[in-house]
Structures are given as structure tokens and as C-alpha cells.
Length: 606
Ligand code: NDP
Image (tube, rainbow, N blue to C red; front, side, top):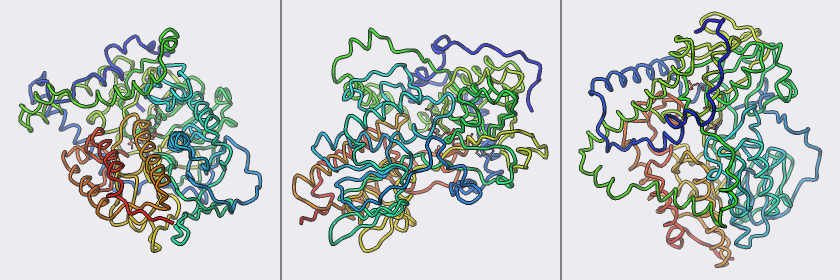
């Protein structure tokens, strides 16, 4: 426990006030390139780097088991953590035995934006099969108080041009994003064939008919010419494997299954409740201020502090919105992606700096940025010990950075208690509440803000390709894909948001690149009368080589404190992570595959 109980609540920092000094825009402008000479003597940076390493080692010593410390097998005693609180129990329906042209597993952004492109190309028979009771994916499930997106809304929300919609604020809130997903589904008639509250259980390639046979937990036995695994990169909630987790006697749930029936719509039922929140990632950062204002007592269990910066949120300027020309979002995206490439003068400047010096400067700049975050914590949190505990000690972007104006000041409230586990984490839950250092913290409700399984899209159900090969079995000796989207031996199957792709802070950009590509492939096969396309083994090998070539370029993964970005500190995987070439390079590769489609795929005709 890191703070005095007697501090008065402090006003939160008004949006936009300090954001000129720190904040997301500041992070975007900050020069991490290595072109700028470091401001301090090297010993200053070396000292901080040594502290970073210490903190990482501490975390690893406590949890050397990497991703195995979590479970997403939410069955048995843990089944309640996956129940959908947003819908009634599904009503019985007749099992489907029909055939569609394109079937999406999952109904989030991936399915929606790819479907839009398919519709533009004249594909009529599109079915979304979705576990939730509506489209929206992440935004269907995550409805916790304060849910919003940290990517500027005009970039994050897909298909704004197509729908003629301008988001209400600089950063869209969850309900607006969900409504936008529903609007897309209506605009492209995606509800017609969609089935909800349905989970795909197996997807098996039928060579004789060149179709996928798709089975679900509702008894469906459908056929689809093309299948797109659009299950999302962070869609399955995970829980830490904690001793006694199933014995907690109070109420508990995961943030992605927020139980408003318990908390009240405006959290009004928490006024007499002691609440524990486990985890301090991006979800927790948005939730804490709301819980702080509503709960009788709030205990925030922290293992590793997030880097929390200001968010310059504001309503959309109506004049600006009124002046937008058709196609504004596409142009904005084009400009942003082009801006991601280094200007030739910067590239030349960087080329003149020896590699070692460049890397040192990049690290030093990163450290300077982290120290700005530290100063911001000191500025926002009254109690010095609490402020100290909330400072992140790792390079910026080792973990997903967070942005919220009210998170840090929430710790100034007398009813908010930071339980800083200093890297160890909670290891045990007793019927009364979580235990740390032998002390039980009795609570009425325990909320797990412990995140999601990462990027396993594509292997959630049993996918069996040519010659009875299971995708999971194929991946067991290392992921093998072509641009992260295709896998040899699995014809007419496309994976979105999986491994071996280049990711960006704005995931929509990645999904759009993939969706355009998939629609292009399907369109090509249809126009040429091909019944199937399968990435060749050679094309796939080329991509695996490319992924490996870009791995290990930096020691970043090994140096970073554990988190889902680096498989919780598991040793550097050769080909199982993301593509570490740049995003422009990834786009070029994806485009190249479409341009050389006859070379990269084996096609079969009827
Ligand atoms: P995260 O995986 O980011 O965070 C999980 C949290 O649980 C971490 O703080 C982790 O600590 C903690 N934890 C795990 N095990 C224990 C333990 N035994 N004891 C104590 N703490 C523990 O999940 P989130 O749901 O917060 O976010 C997932 C992702 O979803 C984000 O990274 C982001 O990509 C996206 N998102 C985006 C939002 C936005 O745009 N604003 C909002 C919410 C989510 P440790 O760090 O030590 O592992």
C-alpha cells in the first residue's frame, strides 16, 4: 500500500491543456529516429537502462513461464468468465446446411471492411458467423465504463467515406464504434445471411468439391467456397492461473464481459462495495477513473505500471466536418501511410551516422521520452510514494502505451488504493479477496483486467486443409504463411490479424491492407473461373525467410519487460511473431503477391 488515506480528491487535468507538452500527438512528433544527438551524458542513459534491465529481470524471475502463466481455457469453474452479459441465452434455431461463397469467422472490423470490398466487387453470398449476438467484435464485447479508442477516430473507424459518416469526437467512444459497425453491416446487407451466438468448431477442406465444410456449436454444417478467419487479434479473454481463483466468494468478471446487472448502468450499485481491479493495462487505465468515482473502496493491483500519457480529446469541429470533400478519409490515410516513410533527407542523415551510434541515440531519445512520462506522473499524483510506484521503468513501446487524463489523478482520491506488487503480481485468491505478501484484501467484487490471448486468429477452431493436415499441427514447428494471410495446403482460406504480419498502432490500417488484398484474390479467382487458389510452398518459404531475416535485428524483444508484445518474455521466436520489416515494406509485399498472383498461387479450375 503506497499512500496516505487522507488526501482530498484532486481535479483531473482538463483535456487539451497539458497535451501540448505531453500526449499522443507529442509521442507521434517525438524524434525517436536517432538523427538527434542525445541531450545528456551517456552515463545518465546507461544508469536508466540498467534500472530497466533490473525491472525486467525481476518480472522474469517471478514469472519465468511466459505465456503459460495465463489460461484462456474458460471452461469448468472458469466458464462464467466467458458468458455474454450483453445478450439473452440463444434461442433454438434450425441448423444451416447451405452453401455460401464467402464465410467469415468473426464479425468485427476484419469481416466488415473486407465484406465491403467484396460487395464492391459484386460478391453477393457473404455470411458472417459470430460468437456474439451482433457484429462489432472487440467493440461488441468491451463495454466497460469509459471504453474508447486511443487511435484518432478519423483514422480508426473504417469506411467513413463509404458511409458518409464523421465521428463525433477526436477519439471515438465504444458505443459510437459499435453503432458504426452495425451501420456498416446494414449498409452492405451483411445481416441477411449472418448467424450470431454461433461458434465455428471445425473448418475442413473438401478437395472433391473444392469447398470448406464449416461446422458450429449450433449444429450447422455449411459449405463455403472461401473462408476468412476474422476472429480478431485480441478476442479471447485470458486469466492468470492463480491459486484459488475459482474459490473467490464474492462477485467477479472479466473487463470484456462487464456485468452492469451487478454494478448498475452508471456504476451506482458500487457505492457500498469494495472493488478490486487486477491489472493496469489499457482497459484498466480507462476503467479506474470511473470505478474510483463510484466505488466505496477501490484496490488496484498493479504488477507493471503502464506508461500513461494525456489524451487530447475534443469534439469534432463541425466546420471542419462540413468542409470535408468526398474521399477525405482515403486521402488522409494515403497521406498518413506516405508520411510513415522516411523523407530522403532524414534517411540520408541517418545513413551518415554509424549504426551503433544511431541505435544508442534512438535508445537515449526513448529514455528521454519515458522520463517525460515520469515527470507527468509526479505532476499528477500527490503522494510521492504512489507516484514512484506508478512510474514505468522500460523503453517506450515495450508495452502498449496508454492515454487517459483521469487515470493518474484517480490515485489522489482517498478511496483509491494502489496495491503495488512490484513485479510479482497477485499469486493467490482467497474466498475473501486477492492476497499479496500474505495479506488478504477483502473485497465484494473482483474484476480481471488481465487482457486477451494474442493473435491466435486462425487457429481457434479445428482447421483441416489438404491431405488432412491441421493448421495447428502445421504451425507447431513454426508458423508458416504467405504475408500472414495465406498458408500453403489451405486453399481459399485467408487469415486476418494473425502472425507474421506487420502491425501498427492503428490496427484498422493493417486490416484494411489485408481486406483489400483478400477481396482482390477472391475477385481474381472468380473472374478467371478458378475454384481454388493455394499459396505455393515456394512463395510461402519466401515469406518465412523474409520474416526470419527481419527478426533479431534489435535486442528489443529480449531487453523489454515482459508483456504480450514479446510473448511475456519467452525467448525470441524465429518466425512466430510479427513481421519486423516496416509497415510500408509489408504493404509492398502484400501488393506484390497480388501482382504476381499466378506465380504465388496454384490455381485449380472446375
Ligand atoms: P493487457 O494485456 O494490456 O493488460 C493485462 C494486465 O493484467 C497487465 O497490467 C498485467 O500486468 C496484469 N496482470 C496479469 N497477470 C497479473 C497478475 N498475476 N497480477 C497482477 N496483474 C496481472 O490487457 P488490456 O485488456 O488492458 O488491454 C489489451 C489490449 O487491448 C491493449 O493492449 C490494447 O491493444 C487494446 N485496448 C485498447 C484500448 C484503447 O484503445 N484505449 C483500451 C483497452 C484495450 P503486466 O503488465 O505485469 O503483465
